[in-house]
Image (cartoon, rainbow over all chains, first blue to last red):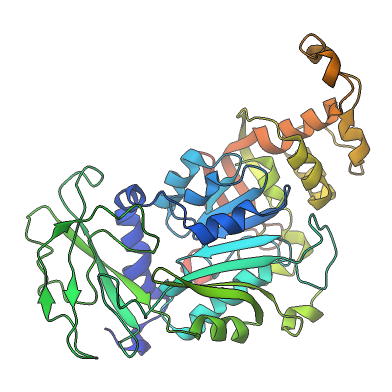
Length: 299
Length: 147
């Protein structure tokens, strides 16, 4: 893993933004089943609610509730184009979580699913959560409410503690990893996915054993920002990802959240955690702007 | 990009967020089209109080759309118990007296959800930055020197 002082915006351009641009259609073909907690959050919103899906990817949450209005954005224009093909009655646009093009303190809800973990320093992750919270109608405002409730955000991040997943990361491992995405063949969407699994040795060692690629039938059914062809931060040359001439490996940066860290970051960003939990390799939290945060005095 | 969107976007630059001049973004060289969508009366009724009506009026003026009244319509005007002429034939006795979407509600639906900007620019009234809209998708990614 690259040292933290090299990480930041340019690092994310290479290890997040450009990767998603390149893998957009392949990525999208593996992601169409909504995760249960996200689906529950969206489907229980009051009709007429207006909110944001920040990091909408292929727009898979835009089909859940037709009685609300979602402004869905993603940093990858290629993913936004895919999302726009099935976004009615919603809208999709290209935007960056750290420069959101929306008025402050306006929205009933915000989703940010598998986004914050792509920011490569703690400061930038907290800035991203601050930016999400700043979009929400704060609890002290009764202005223009549909439900009478303050705005809430649902944030999902990938967990460090996923011992039973095929990656096997767990407490004590390096939290900053590059995760390969392998696109095989010329036609991204037609290639059948495969996966590689890494077995860990003792805590702290990594990448000792690679398994054969095996078909992975559960790519669409299990939640988690997981790729069909991922291994953890094993250098490309050690893996067997490029065993076909036509395959190409892209390295995505992730910060794997340890238990309690998402809640800490939300509170540091000026939010209050209303509900939180763990679901299949991910930490999630529903949060709102805190009564104590700096926006309370804003106009 | 639906006209409703313009009520919920502003300049992406931090320095513009606090400026009233940045909202709404000004559409320029807009190519509009109507993309039909099923009417959702409950949604229109509930979203109406959420709108910045003055901003919507301004945008409609810039786009050369219909002149909107100076204040937002009352929710009472959105439904009628008199069946619209076009619906009379289909309405049976049982639901003839149910509240029905008024013409005003239908017009709002067409304006907010069916009228879309296919291409053009959205210009910040504070800093002058132009955001492109292509194939119905607005791009708010800033060049790095403006972030």
